[in-house]
Image (tube, rainbow over all chains, first blue to last red; front, side, top):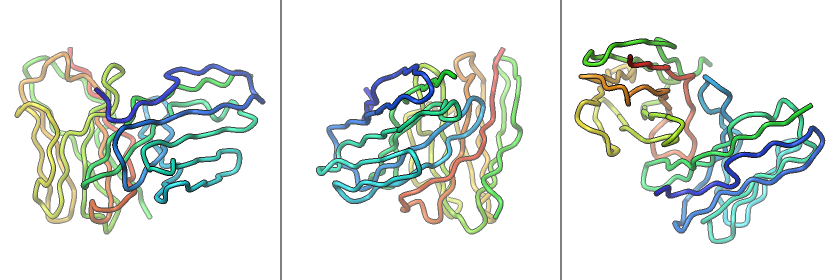
Length: 109
Length: 113
């Protein structure tokens, strides 16, 4: 059983569309990270959210941490082919990172 | 500032052999964690080292071991390799391990045949 559940598992959309990826848990986390990973490479940190209710924007990407610090969402506006990859959320507690199973995003031209 | 460096990038080993993977963390980072990534299980935590001591351990058999040197470089060893050990092995470094961010290397792709 994954401590962090991500949905959807797979997402295939056309360039220009919007999308939202969810990361949910029954546990409270002191912080939550979002990573993007391309095939054969390590995950690259996109953002860290720490405060419940926090919203962070990174160009076309908007990240939100739930008020109770149990869930998070990643919204991409006007997706581009360069956004293709595996998106992972990771919760941090007690000196350990717990990773979600990932959302595989494919943006078609 | 150099990132996390893992060597080698690719390895092919035979069942029953052993393998050693290396990870050099970002300069100044003292915590190194290791993860196994497979399509079916996702990212699974193996162990974390800080100041040459194993501080945290995941649920992997004793065939998986590691160590950390005084310069914070870390090695991971897998003995008696099984086909199921085929995976991308990732290491991540952070300054103290109590930080809220970790930085990953590119990984070592291990294939057991």
